Length: 144
Picture 1: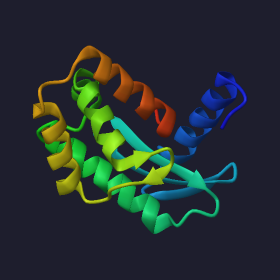
Picture 2: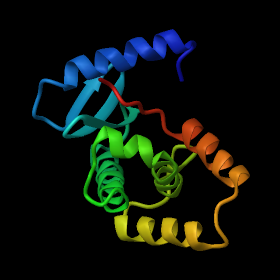
Picture 3: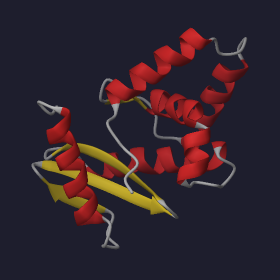
């Protein structure tokens, strides 16, 4: 969506500066609708166009947070997320595909992620494919 990585970084920094000091859960910035949630030292963002339904974006964010909360055993913080990034990308892959919301029920996501992890194990190739797919589908970052 951004012509360069530099412009994306500027956008992310501006979004963080605008949202890190407020208690609300929704913001409009740069022609985008942004819903967000913080947990200890971690900020999770879901970004959509200005025309996106805020309730749908919030359902995706809630699903993401609750699924990560389960996978990380209620330790939704940066260190645990970084150590379990493969599981986080599996969660993202189950929730959204190419900008299309596939699932918003955290129990369904958890069940599918557990099934995929148990189904013969994950090969390095499948993990790499999931990581690449998730990176292309949802752009979010851990901001300090």
